Length: 489
Image 1 (cartoon, rainbow, N blue to C red):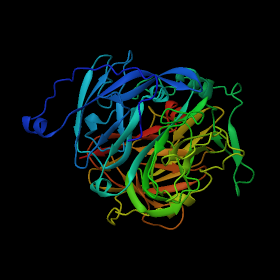
Image 2: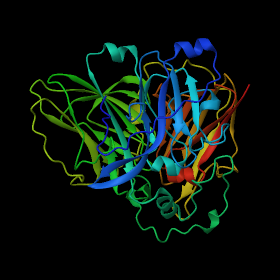
Image 3: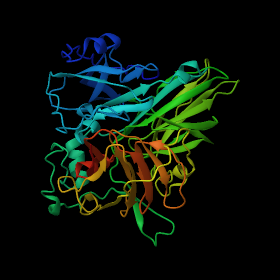
Image 4: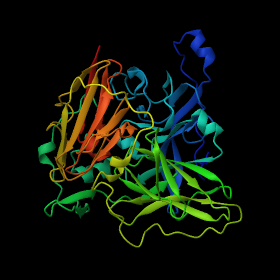
């Protein structure tokens, strides 16, 4: 795998696993893994940066599971702060979903907890469900391979993307939100206190781009300029260079773990095919540039020419010139130095839904009449910095309700000038409309809803429990842009 240990990593502290109340048969058939939430040091633009991370028993970032392997892991918190990890893209029992106090409390420093559930195949990830912690890079890939991945004659590479600030996340969130961030509060207690007092006059850094047909209104693409944009913990001034075979095939698993940055993935001169999104196969979509929002994943298959060479795979920040990425190189190829800035601004990915509208699932949900069709209005503004679902923030939210087994068709209608990547816990849904004709779109867990855009998704309600449904833009989440999918028996 491509996620090599970065220079200067601190060794992960080994921890004793918590005793698990599992039947002996379950214990016997699972190969248990260990995972540590820990601090580590990486190098960013020539400077040492202390960040957090999720390291396996060998000190590597993340986990890779074989086909059919259960997720059986003992997670230990070696940090000096309580935290909790969400298995993004997985469908665990609700008790193991990883949201503070819904229903399990956070892991205290030194505490271990066992997780055991059937793993959903594909490219997924895991991260703290606390915005400040995720912005400290407490996140890692979670790749579950399929039998066809093992049999395919291709190399696999993971491209894990972050936005990074040398400043503490609490300071960053306070500047973005005008002090309205509720990131430090647990989700069960979040309210709206203090929202009326927000003041954005000091910001002056939002990047805006006008949209055609919007009567001159400008959508806000980026509400913070981070210090660096990372690919596998590295910047383009010192990128990861991965050796690939001449004439070979490569599967690049791209994960957008950024707090507040949408990227284009540009494969340059290598012909690409998008073959999966959010871990679920799609009908292959040819191209060399694909967009992905926060929380989303793309699997892109690439063909390396027989003559070989060095091939940058770049992540381009939308609405700006910053870029990051890694380099695929055949043996002996000359690797050119790349700038971390492009010559021109990259366009908005979120201006339309053209990519989403052409994706088609390989395995669609069966056709069923929905038991309900709730409409979720996504609202908010930069000044004051307030983001809502149906006019409410977390704590005053009205849940989306369903009975276990029911088909529910949720329409996200974005009435704001920022895009919102909407993520549903504990379920996969299928995109069935992007505001126009119906189609059997991609099966996902996170869908990007552009300004003034509308996306409908179909989902079959699972375990009777409270499941989070929220925007994966961390400053939006931290100010309460979350509701719940409340499933009853």
